[in-house]
Length: 357
Ligand SMILES: [Zn+2]
Image (cartoon, rainbow, N blue to C red; front, side):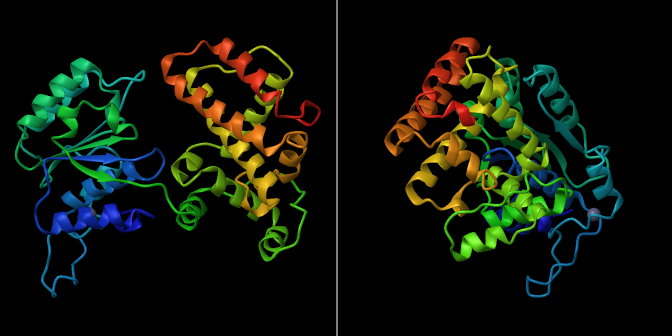
């Protein structure tokens, strides 16, 4: 893999390539954007490209050779970077949800040495916003006096949580969620065929889109569902089984509607569950308003969605969506798990038909 293999982030990659060709690599980048859209992948491939021993010859600069084009993906340097053993490339990520000062000291130690093999010493800090206060203070000093020929790449899906003092010392590169076709290309490359989600295809009104949907194979329907559920963030679909996760979500939804005990094991599970309930409400609204199953995110669950929302009007669906969205915003404030579960259940019972859930 190389920078040319990054899908759907042309703008970000072109900026990196242009800056590299001009020899104007900054001392620190901040790769910002939602999770699962290729920031870390791009960072790794930028590291490869910068230290590649046999970069592909550049023909686009009037035939003159350029030292910086992309990674060859084959030389010892590229291979060492991929397997995490390149002495001039350090990758750090949170442990137990935090990046601590010890890890920042390891960064300083590494950067204080001359590059062993590569042209650049490169540090990639994944989930950089999880640096605790001590780590952030220490890291600021590193950013203030960057050693020569070094590059620090901060990767963050919550860049606003980074201190201003750190953000302002980095060149920010924004990454955006992928359009559906790009998302599909990433997922097709990485996901192996699995069992069909369900055999029943969408019925309902006929239209070219609806006919195309009906003619999909089970595997095609599964892939389309995965693409839609990933919401432009294919990395999230690739890193786990998104269909399995949705089954978990629906199980919990049933339990909630039946006033069972709270089923979230952690705050992360709560957050993910709220992501999925909001998507379900979005689908309920779309189906009520348009009746068009081809527009659903949960495109394989049209019948289910129609049934659970059969008794609710569009007004109450939208009101509930807003309330759920507000609740989701409060999750960062450590809401009590079982109180939230019970409250959400009482909200949902206003909209959803329990007999079909
Ligand atoms: Zn190479």
